[in-house]
Length: 136
Image 1 (cartoon, rainbow, N blue to C red):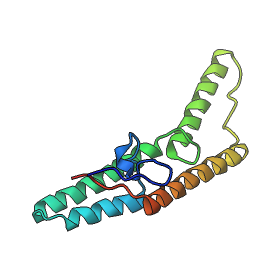
Image 2: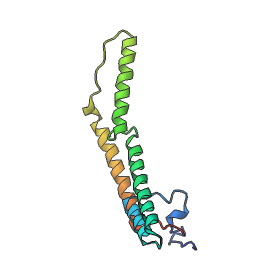
Image 3: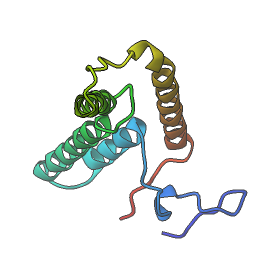
Image 4: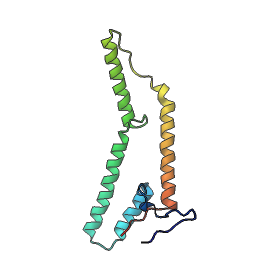
């Protein structure tokens, strides 16, 4: 398939770039539609759709473990921080400093959440205006 160039002289097919296969739920829906529209047997269609669903679930699970505060990994990081801080206090003969004040971390959590929502909206817009096409 020849490359199409946009008005800036860039390849308009995103999958031809190194990071071009990054997609959103819109792109995953398009991949699923392409899988069902393909002229293959139903077993192949079901296996492709299951692969897409499994891939999305694994990604969401691993992404949730990132040590960012609104995610579960962020809460685990705070628990580890509290335990290490208590262990160091115990080594120094001081009392346990207690729990982290989560109210002070709310602005950080809101900021990270806003960045994640913004990136999600940018990916959805990229999938709508310049979708990834699977090469045959």
